[in-house]
Image (cartoon, rainbow, N blue to C red; front, side, top):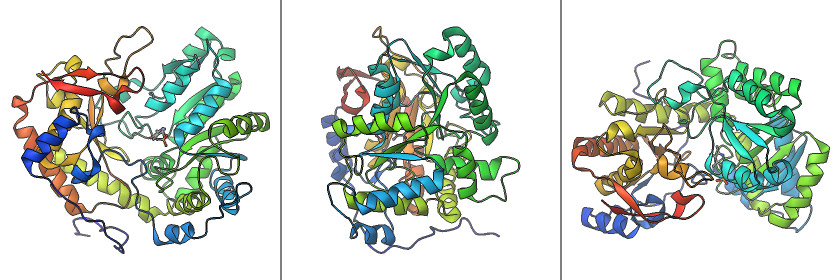
Length: 458
Ligand SMILES: *Cc1c(COP(=O)(O)O)cnc(C)c1O
């Protein structure tokens, strides 16, 4: 087959016009935003690759579902649909709806993470770790070392847990001080890198042996299943649904942000097999989110979410999504631009340390690179480096090995033509990289500083 690519597996039924500012206006806008792309007004952005969170395009069927919202305060029909869908797809018994992923993380952490406990995970996620730490726990990274090396590309499953590191932690602190292990499928901050089925199975066995729960952060589980199908021996002939079912057979529960692989704009849940945990979660969900039959979502949100979860299992959908990411990544590789390899499931990650080797990490190279890409083209991207990593309990910056800029593709939103424009914007920025200088904070929030931090040019 000599087609350049398979086109989008959908056609356009409604459009949202795009607007691009003049260069001087973009300079003004990013300065006003304190060189933080999170603080730009959406109307000043041309192509928005800030995040794939809640930025998805819903299908006609999901919009039809929106009209079927049962907005009863308690016992909404749409909740039962969502619950059945989760039970059917993941095989988990109990479902507690939340307004988004961090709502589920909050409840799970409050129930299980006590001061002095340790929560291992395959690289941290910003909100997940924040909740663990706010409850007095210590996050311990047990991802394989290769995950921290941006150009190590011969590793198919860079999100895997290093079983030796995990076992060492159990021996050091004692299994009774580890309430659960959080397994991210895929690992967002490592570059959307997947975990193999073999690794999931082994992690589950080791955890069971030690009486430790396995909780998935299953926000991106369909992307993970796609990689298992295409990369792992023995899964080529299985459907995405079958792979997902097997993945969750190695979990005791999960937190999920529906804003990603749920293909909706808002929503999430916490699910588990343990009845006692479920009752504790229901007691907390009413405090933070709402009744256990809506958890911060409207009936129509839950309906669209239930439909989206099923649509995401379509092989042609997920294949196209991951192929779009690969297309953009390969264009950059051809141009000699340093990116994280292999290319992950939801985004292309630029290696800012290599892109801007003259800027030290305490001058936030990824932060300034994201700002420069905006100035160049109106394309909005996100810093995932030292600014996102924040500070530890002693107030010291983490200086993570990976200092990245993320180009995240919303689901079913942009075409290949948009991606060609984005690639050229990055190439143009790369060609003038020597002129770019670092940044310093002018305002820094104590937690999750990347959302609201403001910067000045050095
Ligand atoms: C987005 C995300 C979360 C948090 O979900 P929200 O819906 O934004 O609160 C947690 N984990 C991962 C891997 C994510 O990508």
